[in-house]
Amino acid sequence: MGDDTPQRWTVVARNLVEHAGNRIHTDEGAREQGFPAALVAGVTTYAYLTHPVVAAWGADWLAHGGGEVRFRGPVFATRSIDCVPRIGANGAVDVEAVDPTEDRNPRATLAVVRDSGPPAAPRDGDALESRQYVLDGYYGDEYGARAGDDLALYQHDGIVHPAVWPAIANNIFSTDLVRGSWIHTRSIVRHHGIAPRGATVDVHAVVVDRFVRHGERVVADVRIEHDGRPIATLEHEAIIDLSVG
Image 1 (cartoon, one colour):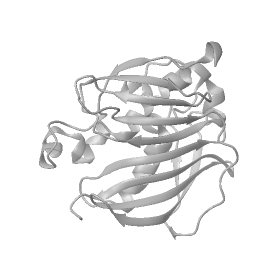
Image 2 (cartoon, helix red, strand yellow):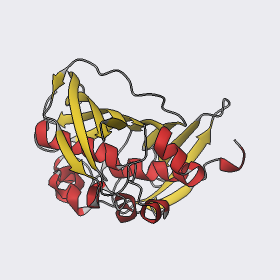
Image 3 (cartoon, one colour):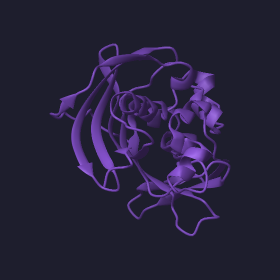
Image 4 (cartoon, helix red, strand yellow):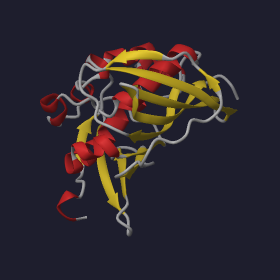
């Protein structure tokens, strides 16, 4: 892949104060669910996994790329996490989050695509209330810097961090769907344009599946539009009730 091959990057995982509303992201709440310490939010782990990709491919990936992130094991706050790109024989890129202190790795994976293509056709399901978000603060260019992603591109160019898209999906889940502590398990994120800091976006979500596996799970399609055009689409999955099953 030449000079633009994504490179390994290391970060100390941290939770943002906004995540304390989900008790799984606090030490006390995580221990109630049998974990040794606070779980770092999946959206933050996703932010870390995007760092090697954006460092290599820049705004082009933010405008047209994407990938599927899967959370395979908890990332614990204050641990040092290695984000390790793996290049396949066909040039495919996977980025793995590795905790050197854990026996079971990777903790999360991002199967990267360089071009997401056009938005998929909407699927049928139970529509949730549409809403608007202003892409600033937590939902703007500052997300990565506050979480530990030190790329200057976002604030220098006023570009919204890609972790904002699953963060918005998480907000919809926590507002409309979850019961108690919950866990974000997987997302397919597709970019369809650059989002400028301060823009107002319209967000539409449809629940397309519900099932039980290690808790009650929901899959939703989320469409984020700016000026009537999609700039990001997601298939977002989470365990919304850990007490079920």
